[in-house]
Each structure stands twice: as structure tokens, then as C-alpha cells.
Length: 82
Image 1 (cartoon, rainbow, N blue to C red):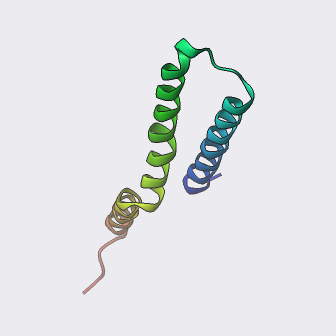
Image 2 (cartoon, rainbow, N blue to C red):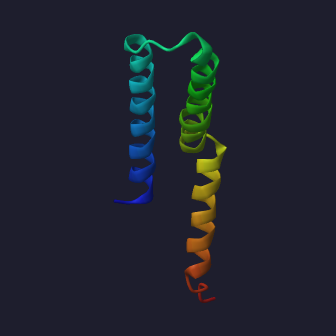
């Protein structure tokens, strides 16, 4: 499994985990004094995992990583004979 497939798999798993956690909120009764803690935890889950994965995969970080790999590959090639 290459790095790109691993990142895609981790993104899919994190989205599914978030939906599972949201599903538990519908079926599990949260005590009144713990509602703010659960809300904070869900906010951290959403912003900490899903958004970060999508920003890396589809944002400028992925393009920057691809560019760095191209530069590294170009540096490994022997210089062209003149």
C-alpha cells in the first residue's frame, strides 16, 4: 500500500468514525452535566481529523509534497551530457 492510498483510507475511516460518533449521540442519552463536554469532543473530532485530512489531501500541502518529490527525483538523475 503506497502513501496516497493510506491517506485516502485514513480519511475514509475518520469520516466513518465521525458518523458513528454522531449516531451514538442520537441513541445514547447524555447526562445534562456532560453535554458541553460531548459537544467539545465532537468539535475536536471534526476539526482535528476530518478537516485536517481533507486540507492535506486536496489543499496546497499535497501539491507542495508532490513538487518536493519531483525535485528530489530530478536531483537523483545524472546530469545530461552536453
